[in-house]
Length: 335
Ligand SMILES: NC(=O)C[C@H](N)C(=O)O
Image (cartoon, rainbow, N blue to C red; front, side):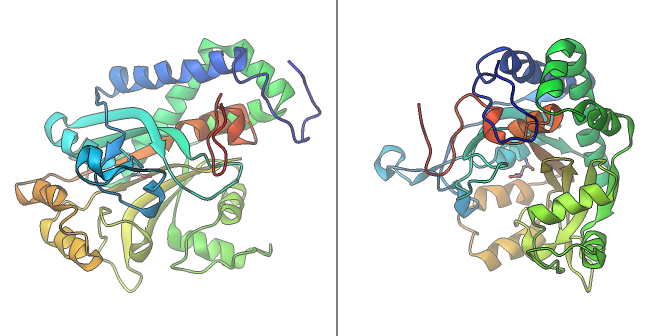
């Protein structure tokens, strides 16, 4: 392994297919499964990669020929909607599979193809319940990785991210913090730091904002909850509050990476979902989703966690392209 000065810009090509990847990269999926099957009693669902409709423009990674399926098909951006169907039958479900996003980004945190762990739980009525599962998933998986391959994690920490071990310990031993989106914007407005994007209620948090918030919170992972209604997708549950109208959404921001998990309570109320889809002109596309509510639904919610970002977070690897053997990103699909 070639070791360069910490802080320099380097590629971990040597690590990708060798020990680091095999030990950490490969020990995470079993650790995740152990958590879901063992402690949580979730059912594993395989999801499909080709879907007939797209939820957001970023799913346009590749448009399949119309003739093959008879309808235009797109690569999946999330298994969530299918997991919602399955959670109606099996109560608690999860999946772990490839996900595609056509973000035109060269950033150190984005890939066009990545893996996501997604979970959906029925009879969940508060964000608190979802955050509890996110926090235990993060902590128990990390503890399993640390106890299954301590030497390899130590080696990576020593040469790639000195100080990461202490940071990880802080994350594991402290309770994650919770702030609302509105509080987050207030904190950012009061910051002495000049941001490239001026923080403003109703506008998405940028990477620089997420970084500031995590540092402000003492480098402990922080849940940001209740985002503006107009910023979020149609399936998130309306908090029906005013004057600042929000939905029951939650993102978990972690040191060094920013957003690691995203989730929400889902809108299970037929009339509210129907109005929202109609306003967005999506009624026909999501008729099947609406039917899930039409014929009876239960309060439910879930989340997704980016697998490669999780590896970045626990190992302290700066660039996401260094935790995956064959990274795909805009204008790059090599090998
Ligand atoms: N399953 C989830 O809640 C993940 C969410 N659909 C996302 O795309 O981030």
